[in-house]
Length: 389
Ligand code: ADP
Ligand code: ZN
Ligand code: MG
Image (cartoon, rainbow, N blue to C red; front, side, top):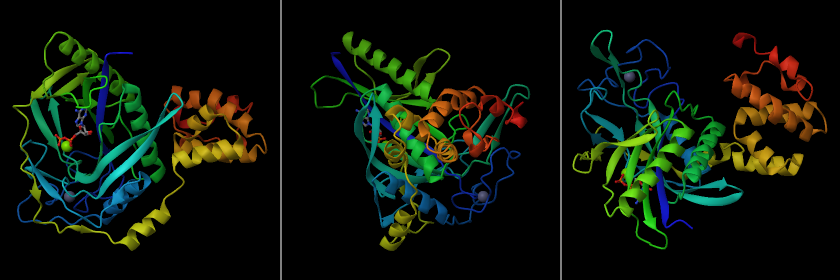
């Protein structure tokens, strides 16, 4: 048994796929020309007032309900004050003390073992813009298209004990977001981002060690590697009789190492206070009940049903339910291939999924209808992604 135990708490930012921004009617569309999706509200002009997008409240509540949180009847937006060129107002509107959802739990599975990770809270907040540094023009530019696009921040308790568990937590959470249809969960495009708080302590010690916060983890593989590196670094420090400094560190994938970004002394004091331009968010029990009734079958429930209904092995059921589009494809294909769901599952796992992976495709873009799919159809499958040839 190793001498030290790893302790991890994750802060995830998920971009929501609403049509419009959090406090104005600007489009959230990705890929428009810089500063096309901008108005006086999201560009921080003085004298304008934010108006809350009701869809965001619904989405936040639904994620809360799907993760066993209490949805609060009253929550409060606060201003998080700091200066940065991509933040025209000089503050981010966020939640903290009175967040919309609290005290949830996410059940993860690692090596066949189930484990509950508690969720501290889910808060609604706005995204910042983007700085673009151009070497060619020797200049920096600010694109405010992303400014005030709605995010949910999901904060876990420090219940995670390994890099593997951290990845399982992230995959489970992402899968729920996709099933709810409230986020595209695209990590490369930044719509699913994660900061990992990592500390170690001698086995058996109750008190937590000093943590470092790792930023810039934009793939599952980087999350795993960054945490593994960081744990080794902290163990080395302690073994050498030194101390871990509480700091924010950046992961560099090229070097596969983490580096100091800012220490505790440079930690920001954000001077949070309730936003005087926004009234508290009220949701009554009838609304919460209605949203509860609208929840789709969630990944775990679907997996259980695939085990029962189709008699799939555990691993297969897991692979086929991780993404909603894949699960739906399987159900349709299994039905049309009457009575041989295991054969369809084998074909999908052995041929379709690797094919999608290799070609960067998703099941919902497969032009071959599930009805026409199935064992022995791989050659046809290859002809059915015409736009990707
Ligand atoms: P802060 O207010 O300083 O951001 P929080 O209590 O909100 O601190 O914690 C932020 C994140 O850090 C949470 O996900 C939490 O689980 C995690 N965390 C807190 N303490 C530790 C620790 N000692 N080791 C690892 N993670 C921790
Ligand atoms: Zn706007
Ligand atoms: Mg915090």
